[in-house]
Image (cartoon, rainbow, N blue to C red; front, side, top):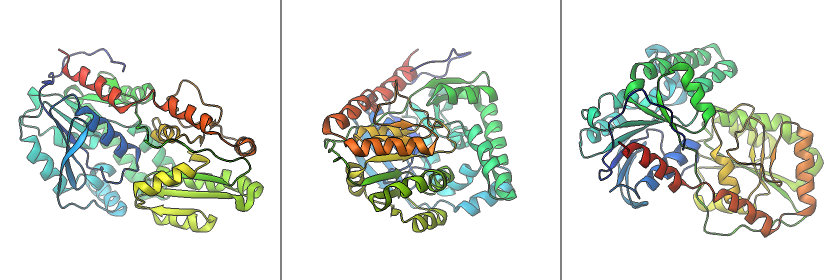
Length: 406
């Protein structure tokens, strides 16, 4: 984990104190990268402190020694995409703030922030900063913000790809609000970035902000990978939050650019499955049009079964922000990936069975070559061994050491 030189010191975390995490987007089952990162990093963090409380969208989970100790449910409902966008425009704020930081979530966060026992407070995304700013014990414990990606690049990309003027306006206002709240509170925060590229994006907005780089991790499944027989069916799998525009755009990009050549060549031997929570109507229409299998809000058991059968996972992003946790999750199950060059790999090198390319012809040639020779258990196990170098516990230990150092 790389540290940036600091202009001043944040309060030091008491290593014998618990930790509080505010994650208004966090829902189960875990499908989106930010949900997986928050759950796994901070549950692992509980191995180094007495406990960690994570306030999610409608749950307060306590973790002790890496395991779930208790769950308290509370009533909350996030706003629809349309309502959140309209509130963003009317209130001149930020889309994620209006969608996720509801009155109910805020009340639950304020209730826990009043507890001075917590040794540190973590906010997921900069939209939690207004809540962190009202922490009555802010001067005695550090505030860390998980950025997950480059929000500024993300909102600029949305401005370019938005389907209508109101969506572009919401994205522009979101970028402006995020920059404003970041600059106003940068000296009270320690930002956790996934990559150096992400950190550079934030440095352009606030050159003096304090930051660390905490790469994403991965959990290795208990079940070993299974072989893929040569010349068998080709099963492609996409996993992600299906209400997120970037994922919908990626699937549309795959459907227009890569799927036609693969379908033409492999015909009925080609199968595509899409797994994720809350699929947008746009994704439902795409799956119906192309004949893809859609598995909305699928339980973990079904996801793991689909991963075991998959020939490749799909990362067909026309644009992307940050490293892709989906990539590590794929190889942790022994499944190679097909990705565009926009995906930041966080790997020393790309394994031979995986592909990072933009030309549809390259995708076809790669899939055809792998199909002809198959994938042995040994080859798939090599992918798992690569994934084992990246663990959530190692990531959590690095954050703990940074927060508790004098």
